Image 1 (cartoon, rainbow, N blue to C red):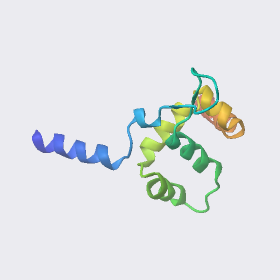
Image 2 (cartoon, rainbow, N blue to C red; image 1 turned 45 degrees about the vertical axis):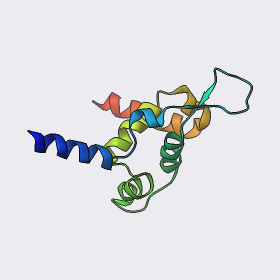
Image 3 (cartoon, one colour; image 1 turned 120 degrees about the vertical axis):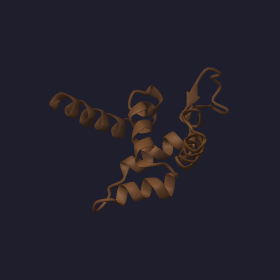
Image 4 (cartoon, rainbow, N blue to C red; image 1 turned 180 degrees about the vertical axis):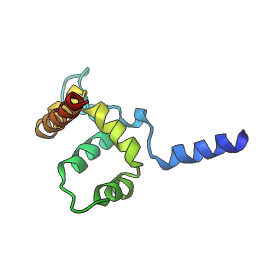
Length: 109
């Protein structure tokens, strides 16, 4: 069993930062103590999602190389971002487009 646990720990570190690393950082200098902004990783996920990718596997390769995440973890983070009002405020066009795609796929099921 120890080998399984060690293997799990290795996979966890390969997939990049934990969910707490995507949490918002306090906004600096905006005068609103309670306001929070998206973390760097969350902004990077949205920026990658705005881009177009040519050919199969190009997006997955970019996810691994640029963000250091597995594609599965990337899509988990992205799905959570779609429900985050801070993500909507940061990039409303991308978030609304992805929400429509997600809703259409759910409706097909």
